Image (cartoon, one colour):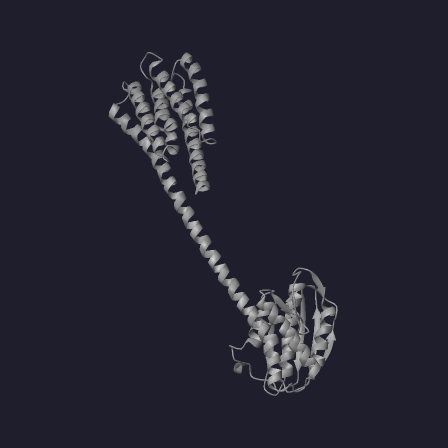
Length: 389
């Protein structure tokens, strides 16, 4: 709240500076009209106007009450000089200069005198003294009641501005703080949801796949490969229990991702995918490029989605052979996974299943990629994966 109070005071000071200097300039212009005041009065008044302008400039930079007192004192001196110094009748230009000073230039201090009780007391005293001297100085030129109404309006408006800003700034700060709390809560909820989805993907891609193999007595997979897979899954579960954030590698193991922005050669990790599915009994034919540079977080998503597509071929297609074609251009890396299996109708896919929705589509979307699925009963399945370079 202390910082908010400082910003509020700084805003009030700047408003007072602009407000006061503007009407000080108008008052000087009134005096420069030929015949407004004698030349001797003008020579004395102009230095006083300079002091008044300097004080008004300083009030925009400093909260010291000294500058308010200087403005009020200098304004009173000018009003007295212009009203009584000439010794003759008050001209219209001199009258205008005095009212500009009393009702606007000096009254601008009211903007900064509404924040504390002591400052309000200074505001009331200044208003009474300045208005009293101004009424005495202009009594011969205009009805005192009309002048009093003008002076009252001139002091009331900046005071209202000061009160309104003083009340509005803390209220705006509270609303900003409330928005900040809501944003933090939303971000925390999003992070928790992202962690939940990541955990679901990890379990689906590793532990649940291994349990499915065990449930089918490891058909098509040799005992050594099954043991390796189970050991990798056990390591992943230990890391989860210790609060780490493991990312399953493309060959089915797990590791903690250290450098999410480093670039890694796609070819150096595709080999591990080949080895994994070779052990699992799926014969995969690889086509296209094998050396593509990708940021490591994009590479992780790409290879894990590719591995999940091959796992789906192994488990659901009814064939033991798949084809993977990898191509790239200046902006995109694509992988096409094709099998000649039983296929399926896209309308029959359960939207609640994690296999394709989360482990493939969701994973690629998080790095700016996408996945497209083509299949029909009896015509095999093709999945196209795309990620940005």
